[in-house]
Length: 124
Image (cartoon, rainbow, N blue to C red; front, side, top):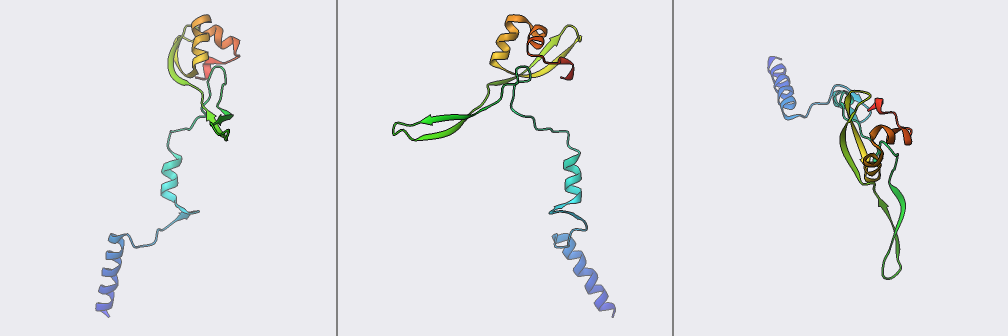
């Protein structure tokens, strides 16, 4: 009787060390603790679009080869992350801007360019 009890405890200890024991709680196919840590992450995926102009990728571009085979390709926006000072807000804002937006800012200034494209700088 005692031998069977000791053997059962020993098997349970070896199984837990080896990782053979069943998880205690599931959420779908993932562990509950794994999804809780992923949900608390502050990382947010953003779309690849310009914050000022709203430009996004051209998904209808085509490549024409020498043999006239036409294949689809994606032309991505040339985005740059820039920190700029806004005098009316008295703080800097971080923006993901296309090169066209950078040229517009060089020409008009940040606040005039934001007014032109109807962009609210307070949300950045």
